[in-house]
Amino acid sequence: MEYHKPGSFEEATELANKNAGIIRFLAGGTDVLVQLRSDIITPDVLIDMKYINGVKDIIENDDEWQIGVAVSGAEMSEHKKLTQEWPGIIEAMDLIGSTQVQGRATLAGNLCNGSPAADSVPSLIAAGAQVSITGPKGVRKINVEDVPIGPGKTSLNKGEVVSAIHLPKRTNNQGDAYLRFIPRTEMDIAVVGCAVNIEIKNEVIIKARVSLGAVAPTALLLENAAEKIIGSKLENKALDHLAEEASKACNPINDKRGTIEFRTHVAGVLAKRTAKIAYDRARENK
Ligand SMILES: Cc1cc2nc3c(=O)[nH]c(=O)nc-3n(C[C@H](O)[C@H](O)[C@H](O)COP(=O)(O)OP(=O)(O)OC[C@H]3O[C@@H](n4cnc5c(N)ncnc54)[C@H](O)[C@@H]3O)c2cc1C
Image 1 (cartoon, rainbow, N blue to C red):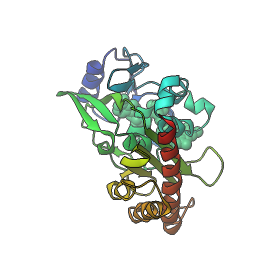
Image 2: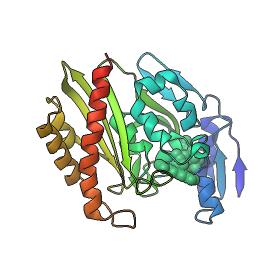
Image 3: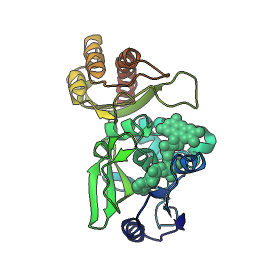
């Protein structure tokens, strides 16, 4: 196995493009190293992202947050303003593994590992987050929901690497939240994860994005479910319609953590609960 420490994204791209075999990027390593040590995947080429300038930065611009691809969940949680603006994304990152894992795990790694149960992915989708991708043809920007295409698979082409995560800046009257269900209290992966991001005006929801994880081969953006709460003050009827649409969108697997029926039901329950928290946060955010 070759190990490389590129000093720029262009160099990382070149390495990934010119080498054959199994290529992996090393961010926090909490997926890559576990897969390597347990003989699930042994990369031929390991490209360490941590030595590229700026990858540890959280930058606040006028219209967006730019989060570096080696910023850990713990570093995000310690950023006061980011936590105030995007509590749902932070609570998703805070659910990943243990304190030790959170000290290394990154948004980019969580997204590019391609797990349908990845906790931060629904929260990023609900936020309307985008990623910059640097590749042999230059830099392109895509929505987070367009990155995963199946379990363990992404839409990234040969030689492409995620070079930044972009979150919109917040205005007043907006709020987000993330909840997941797991069979035990911690250190497990989501049976269902749900993120909701809401904007209100005079207590009426004027914008909403709803996303579910672990109920389909990739995290889902539920436009129909969001429609059910837009125009409402999240009354019980709107919540019931939201739950119905959330359950309808599910295409889950049966496994030891939950049956198809259970996951489908829990998706509706979580959608309601998550929407209520996001709505309350939007009301408090004056
Ligand atoms: C004990 C334990 C508990 C865990 N619990 C959870 C949990 O509760 N919820 C959850 O969602 N996950 C969990 N995980 C999985 C893991 O911690 C997360 O997926 C984490 O966010 C991965 O980030 P990383 O930086 O460590 O990724 P890495 O392991 O460094 O990389 C993961 C994948 O992403 C690719 N990659 C990394 N950076 C880039 C980039 N910039 N561009 C393109 N591809 C890239 C790599 O090639 C690799 O395929 C757990 C892991 C462990 C070991």
